[in-house]
Image (cartoon, rainbow, N blue to C red; front, top):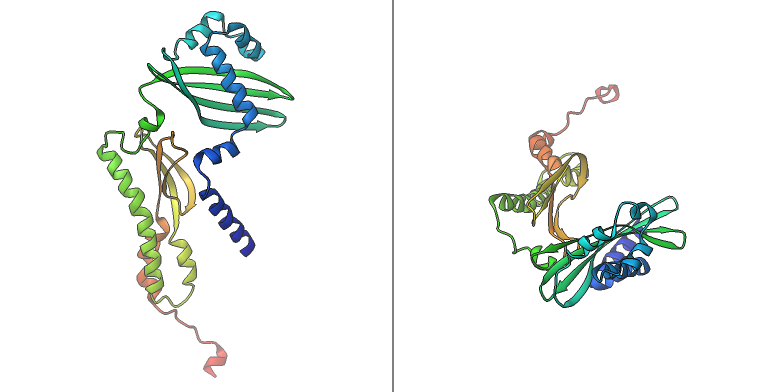
Length: 264
């Protein structure tokens, strides 16, 4: 067990020493992402013959030259200044493999996002989906913590995200100070147990939740990357609340029932 904990610690230290670009370079499949980027470049430049050659037969039956041109026109006009991959998600099912890649394009006239879904069958790569849409600014700017108009809902969620773990930590401290006759150690663990999980998208203001969950230390404020929205997560501290509800009873010494030997 100790070796496992050391391994996790060293892994955390190693990851913390990596920049986002270094970590992305290790996790994003290079060949497939470059294939997706090259395909979207052909869409941008309306290289219809090359676009058709990369389409999976199932997708090819659903599109036309006019549809490809319409998608291409969603790119901004003007000079292309930069292209950056900002999203990568891969799935594997049996022998099948798919990769979903999102790129951010900066033009002299504005910003656009483009997405391509790559399918691998053996050594062959093909495109099974693609889309383009315009954005008002870069995703870094749109998803920055200070970019949105803060509502009372944002403030309440932020307070809960901070308050719930603080309540758990304080409860654990009180457990340590409370004279509980037996089984105190288990209450250290129970103090950090929460039921239900809540996740709040700071950019969109959308709250999602899962009711049938049991979590340990289920809270945090994080973003998947510099382009992703900040997510606030917290859980209800049911374990800590249970301790406070039972604290007086736990402090009472257990009644020892005398045995026959004690009577003699």
